[in-house]
Length: 555
Image 1 (cartoon, helix red, strand yellow):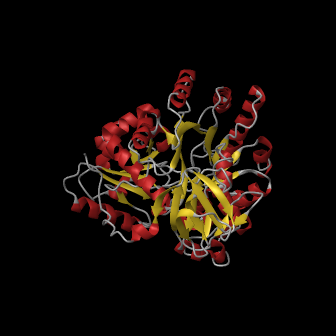
Image 2 (cartoon, one colour; image 1 turned 90 degrees about the vertical axis):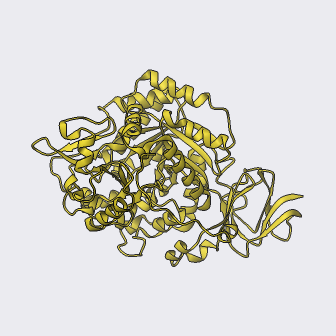
Image 3 (cartoon, helix red, strand yellow; image 1 turned 45 degrees about the horizontal axis):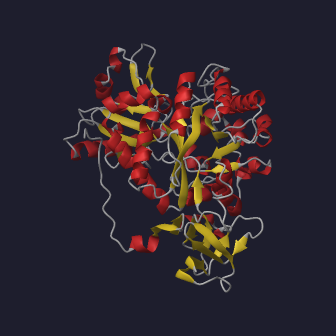
């Protein structure tokens, strides 16, 4: 007898022998029945889906669980003007006079037209230091009080970023290269010393909040793409406390200037963790370049609005190849951030050389973001067996208008997030959210993949790269499983596979003609290893706690 039968559904299995079904049966943590509703065995528990869609559990291949939303920091999401940014930060400072630092998250680069924000844009809000991260976590914005508190106005350098200075050498209040530096051992230690938001307890609270959101969103496997060795213990703690409601794959962070001894330390850190059903480490996160919005990603030609400037690679030429070759030899799969077309080419060249040198096959190295892709490099993903880990939400004009689009220039817009072209080339494209850069909800990513539009439906952009619903779902399921060597067990509904699946609130395929309706849907049930980890009906019956409005406290 089955433990659980999900029936009267439209089941998209992504299995070649039986792509569609009506019912799924679960015994223990495995799928033990796929087929028609009328032929299903008896079960201890039966859930009738009333025609709703069932899919494999979604795999979010790039989701910063450790960033999350801090309940004690104010979000600037949706704050598109300086006046609105100032209003939110000021309101927070007034309501919490007890706090030493005021922190804000998710600022957009275009909040000040024609230039980057500066410290004096935050003047008069509070007599306490203000620390603001951008929505992509690659830049920080400080007020004058913070510049003094950190010693930057006296010429001090930071372990967690590069202070921008004007022609007279005075700090502007803008910090670049933040995330690449902040997750190094020295950078994280300095942040934990100086900025209360980065304390281990605050980071752990963020992690738990992100995990809860993942299971609520139908995500059954999450790839945390940047785990510093110093924070590996946070994920191990969550596992030991039974808080991993989704499976987690932790990619260990490799600073670009780390040496061979550090790579051996990574190998030990991955190997000493006991095999677990919910947690494993092993991929290694690297950076080929930074990001396009502040002109720090590496481009093959000059930025359109900054003649003579092409950004820069994250390491001297040849260094990334040397590192990936050694990691490949040590048995590691790499997960390399690359946004500019120069950065993407650099990563592809490094992977190709590593495979040639070591004679390795099927390592399934990945390149993350692939925001700007030169035409000559498009077929190389399929030829090299490299996964493109991409985020459809990043294609939305409401996120990139005024910065990304202007910096790259209209002549190169055809190179932007070529999801459809890569899929049609035979490349493996694993879709993801890049939470908290974009919303974690995969239905937002699916909507963006189908429309290349803003969330309000306006400003459709580069429509030639739109994909269909089936391709988008496959990118979040079967392709995600392939990317992490899990295609036999995850991302597919077939006999013997792990019982990770989602029952949606409706048949999503009913809404392909009006994709905006997808944004009104949700995961009704999320099941991981045969266990119901989210039940929307039960959740909606329980009154929600009011969301706190907080700040960056010194606790």
